[in-house]
Length: 173
Image 1 (cartoon, rainbow, N blue to C red):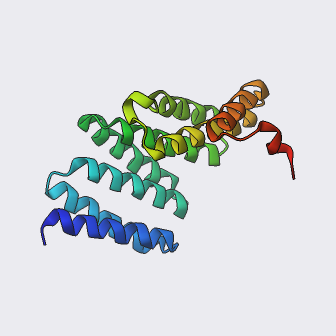
Image 2 (image 1 turned 90 degrees about the vertical axis):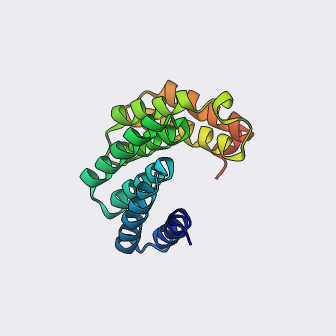
Image 3 (image 1 turned 30 degrees about the vertical axis):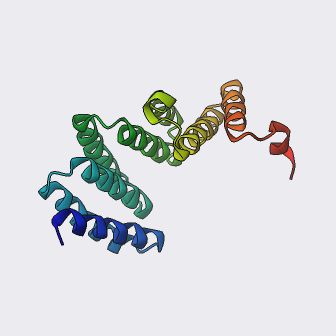
């Protein structure tokens, strides 16, 4: 088995461990994976792995390590010209700031991600609409956090349009 195949297998294991909430094991496996990808020159996969490490650290509660990982993943993604990974990292940084109640910072990163989340970059792949919906809903929450309710309402409506649901359904409980 080649290094790339081993790295892919390790990445699957790291993701599975994360899904099982075995965060410290997932972090260790993700570190191993990033090293393998780097050793064989698979830098985009390495950036995705380091981004996952950022998510893991955020889940553990280590904000500093999370941000460090996100910034490293961003640097590699920019070097590789991977707008998809840049968008993903911006969203994750925004999500971290949103969780911390730093809504203005979150909005900045969500808007940067939204700028990259355009059909010409992604085509008609299934995840495009999920990403677009997620970004609008995150912006809705963040604008609500700073009492900019008109912008929050607008982002919520955009999310409803993307999801093809009736906004009136949001108020049914």
